[in-house]
Image (cartoon, rainbow, N blue to C red; front, side):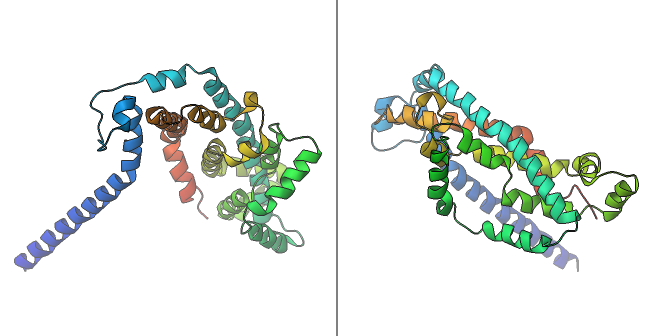
Length: 283
């Protein structure tokens, strides 16, 4: 029996070692492209262009970062991005949560049909509405402004409503009924009772919304023409186009664009994981 226990113990240890080795291999494969971008961005131009390719630079050159950090247009693009993204993510998540509360806790005619239509709209590719939306915004004079990037999102999204509804159905109905007994309206119940409970989900959605808006390149490319209202992604693309063939500078723009997103993720990682796991509310 002791020999068998030792055998099982050795097998368990080997299995654990193999598991960690496989995970380590996958981590290396995932991080390898980022490592290439980072180390190439600090290479001198002649070393970056030479063959065969070397992963680590023989000497470090930070002139590309100096050029980016001293470019006023890049910082203007970052400010423009925050102006476009931050108000929308807070208002959009709040409105989506209100709609999700209605679908989860309020009884009204046609609720299931409306929710089915909402879910079905998630199946439609965005390119289907791209041309009609552009024509509409052009007719009302919103092209070359931030309005097309901000106003639609302030009315919420189907994906956010779907996520928040799944979170809200876990809230005990007794809490809602208690609020009604106290004479609270549905909006007051949402603000005073529901909103504090669903805080983890709200934080997760706000973070995800920030990533989506910050990384958006297609929308600004379509609607924005004037350079003074470009978002960061458009400014960095323009900056990279001005340095065609300058591989370190192009890689440095990639690294610079990643830094704000990485900072936000590092600061909000626990809140994001907690909100997505849906463990904040138990029925």
